[in-house]
Length: 491
Length: 107
Image (cartoon, rainbow over all chains, first blue to last red; front, side, top):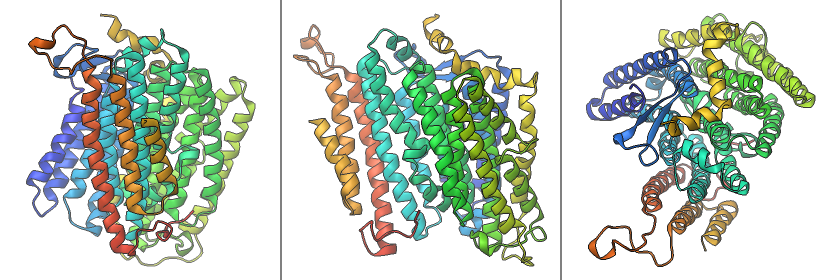
């Protein structure tokens, strides 16, 4: 039973950090890195050790519909692995970057709480528990966005906090409606109960959850907070927010609720399709016009979330495969791009692309890895972004939706165009930069190199044979709702 | 009643320009949600959900939503405190509570 440790370890680490850290941050760094490393080992062990079965853990040993339950299946262990990888590299990157802002243990304590919240959202099988863990993650995210202490950061954080609080309340009302319709909060039991109730109830619940979690995932009509929050936060936190937070809180919860709980109602699948396509196009159009590097990346997050939603909306096994794979890939290459932006900001003190120049001399690692990440996000083979976008486009054509496939291709080409701009002005410009304000340390470089290697390495997930053990179980979990229900009714 | 509260909250959130009024609107939205949950638990002629000798045979209201509301009130307390702290910091930086003047981030 390793499942509760995904919540216990980071929570304990956050607690211990506040207790023993004192004025210096060495202990905080050591503790948080140990915690995240053990989480990574545990999650890889969990993902590799289970062959598609579902493990449940009953908290405080009460039987299922009464007590709160933690659920571990392929989807949740896949997400846990993603969170662990990104948070480990993010911590490595933080050590130097945050010292530049201030020497402080509070950052690490908040960071651990953020990881706790996300792991809790992923692991839980109870609707209200999901809400509570979501709030834990959101609170620490608000505080971390404002961490730098400049006026813009408080402004972005306030905007994010208002939007986040409003969406949480919508989700709470959704939970209330669900409870009144089914008299239970365990998600699998809800799925079972909803089969016998009026289908109009499903519409209500779906609408409320779509608005709430759609806001968390920053799909198009609800995207206004994302560019501010993601571009104002410190770079490692931008990576956490853009790489995993919007996915754990938004996309993962949407997948669980709409596919496992509500059995993929037709109307909302179409909403996914349309929102996804709008997000792809509008996000990328807004991104092209940006000169602030991190803001450009934040708009691209909206566009890439659009691809994931599109894959979910296609709702064939191939479409879901594309969505899950793109989820993982986006975490990696967008994380890498935010590290690049962070190290450029750290080295040059600017985020404006026009003020950068040819950086390949002074920051070889940054400029090389940014090249890899740019190629990956715009879908150039053999990097991972190519395969997942290809799968989504093929799935759209197979499902008889050629127009959506066409829009996805257009979005991909525009992405390439905007990253050509980044490379042209930002990293391979005409003026050659000779010296840096701050030197990029080995820890920042290591974090970037790890993700750059993963950019290429995760392409092997798609090779037949490896795919059967990595991605297919995840798709099965999403597509076969019956299994999710049976784990409770079966005994 | 709680729908009206919800509408008041949404209205305040969309139209007000003052940071403090925005925070109040968020709180009103939260009250609406809590009242909504309590309403689901209500049954006519039911007693409070505590087992005692004199009400063993009576119908009880559903205690679970009340527990949920307790949790969500605590969470809202946290939200309000955080928002207020941010508003204080924003006031220190900009010397105003008017959100139309706090616009250093655009587009």
